[in-house]
Image (cartoon, rainbow, N blue to C red; front, side):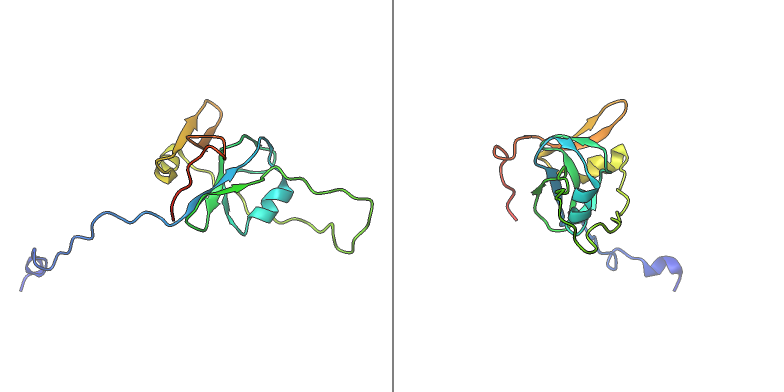
Length: 140
């Protein structure tokens, strides 16, 4: 038996197209500047695409949700500064570096209700409808 005889059409199984990933998007629910405090609290929800100091607007995709639905998040939240001292409250925040995407990766990531914005200085992903209350909910 030759090596060519092993791969006949009867042993080849068509796997079809790859299945879509079961992840959603983390979408900014307001305009502002991303803070490290907000990213630190969002890291358990998904992987971030933005770093602290990045300006964002409502409807902009700021990360990938580990679950299969889109989640509106407050990525511009700041830490409340009170006059009270707490033990261990000001510990160092450890941030996971953001995932930076190329144009091809961004186009692969988006769904039908999302767009990719390309400017000379930025590459952003956003929802087609920016306002959260006007956006149709995706069925899971």
